[in-house]
Length: 113
Length: 113
Image 1 (cartoon, one colour):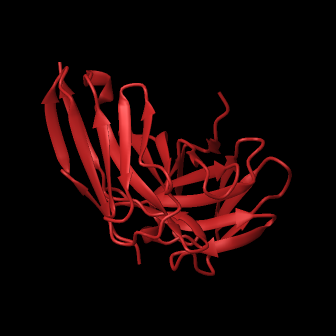
Image 2 (cartoon, helix red, strand yellow):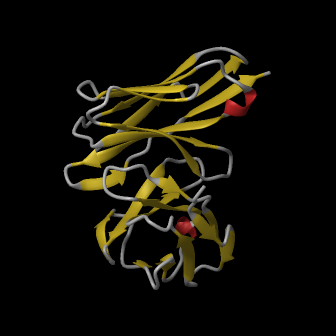
C-alpha cells in the first residue's frame, strides 16, 4: 500500500543550525502538508502546498520556515535557524485533492539542543 | 477559529467491549472530518473520512457518525481488542476555502486483555 515516507526519523541539532526535513508523498497526490506536534500537545497545522506554491500557512510558519518541492517526488521543510522551541515531531501529509483523505508519514522527531 | 474537544481524555475497557469516543467542534462549516489513531511515538494512521454530506462511515469494526449542524462526531469501536490500544484523534477539515485539519487532544484508549 502506498505510504508517505519521512527521513530522518530522528534528528538532533544545535540551536541556530539549519535543518531540512524530507518527505516523499504518495506518488499521485497533489496536495502536501506539514504539521507538527510538540510533546504532549495537539497536532498543529504548519503549511499546505499545491501546484508548486504555498496555499496556506499558520502563524507558526514564520520567516524561519520554508518548503520546497525540488523534484517530482520530494517535499522538504527547512528551518533556517532552529530554536529550542522548534523541538517537536514533524509530520508530512499528502492528499489526492481538496476534501480527500489525508495520509500522514511516521514523522521526524526534531530535538534542538 | 476552529476548536476541537475530545471526551473522554482517557478510557480503559476490558477486551470485547463496545465503546464510543466523542468529538465536538465549534465551527460547523467543515468540508469533512477524519478520525486517526496514533500509537506512542508514531505517526497518524487514517481510520475513516466522513464527508460533510454524509452521516456515517464504516470500516470493519469502526463506525463514525457526523452531526455537522450540532458540531459532533462519534467513533464507535465494536468488540474492542488489545491491538486497538492507541490515542484516537478527531480532525475536521476547516472549510471556507481552507483545507487544513484541526486536531483535538485525542482520547487515549487502553483495552485490557
